[in-house]
Length: 390
Ligand SMILES: Nc1nc2c(ncn2[C@@H]2O[C@H](COP(=O)(O)OP(=O)(O)O)[C@@H](O)[C@H]2O)c(=O)[nH]1
Ligand SMILES: Nc1ncnc2c1ncn2[C@@H]1O[C@H](COP(=O)(O)OP(=O)(O)O)[C@@H](O)[C@H]1O
Image (cartoon, rainbow, N blue to C red):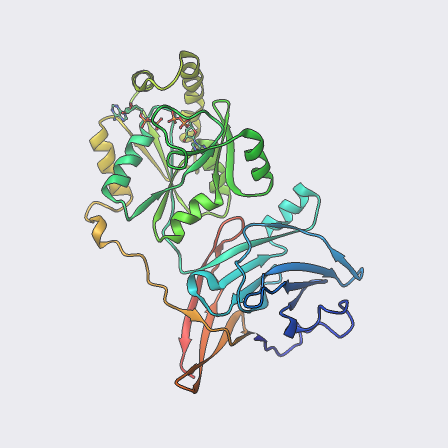
């Protein structure tokens, strides 16, 4: 495995790296981006190589110790790597299906630069590449007691294989009927704060005095299963997601009146009087924010529940559909262990070599990364792959 190229962009001259790091045969791949050499590879357990990252700064002749964000790829039998756009590295895992073979190491993207500033260290971030678009997540916001949970529960019940719920983390105490891992991941504040620092969350916010947050894992577990992810988050969270890398639809739910909101909140009977007062105070600001220009794509008034639910389904284009005819896209593409990658005019050619009944077979694929969307801390979507007759 390796890269084929015309301008020696990826060749690290002999003697630049300390001994032991310049040999592809040891399972390391070296990629130069700007003035840095990224050594991608790692220790082997005999069958599989872990995919670790080391950085050598050519200008100082020193190793850098970066903070590595995101979940790294699982070990593979081998991989190849190639720079993309001078700010990230594409890693192709061999002997792997399309669901797990494309990975990006972001080395100089806006997200990485922002995190480096925040953390005061060098930063690189892993993000998994996804072929095509994946179903677009839906963010649902609105004041406490407006009926978000009720509407989402109806949707999940009617379309169980279409939708999946993003289970948030929270530091608030569970209510009587709430189940850990189903309604929320109930967690301690210090643990959640640590995980926020480690960039495990797409967004987090202090809401009614408690910390709430959407982990990257919560959203990706749903979208990786081919389901459309539903996020029930407050307006601050919606704002963060809107500004971030997740391409979602944003829906705000309004009550018919403030009095009705108060009535519902009291009738639910899950909060103390003090908590109800706090939620009602915050509701006024949330209602103003919800109507602010550019944040939400749609506003729905939840007066009569059935009418609101029908309108929600219309927005999500579900009215003429049953759950049974929803099929996630098939992704049957597989990269063999023996492959190489080269780049040509912003596109990548993947040469795959397989052997069938003792006969060598070469196949060629074109990987188009010109319309990538998303990226760290979530997934990198819109990879397009085409088979080429060779
Ligand atoms: N930012 C953010 N808000 C969340 C998250 N999970 C829930 N929330 C919001 O936190 C608020 C309080 O939620 P909860 O305590 O379940 O009370 P409820 O809205 O009255 O049912 C609601 O506005 C939720 O939408 C999250 O992961 N991130
Ligand atoms: N359209 C509606 N009309 C009357 N009651 C409603 C309506 N929608 C929801 N409710 C009730 O209002 C209360 C709050 O709803 P819930 O879904 O828990 O709100 P949220 O998740 O937005 O805090 C619940 O007791 C629910 O049964």
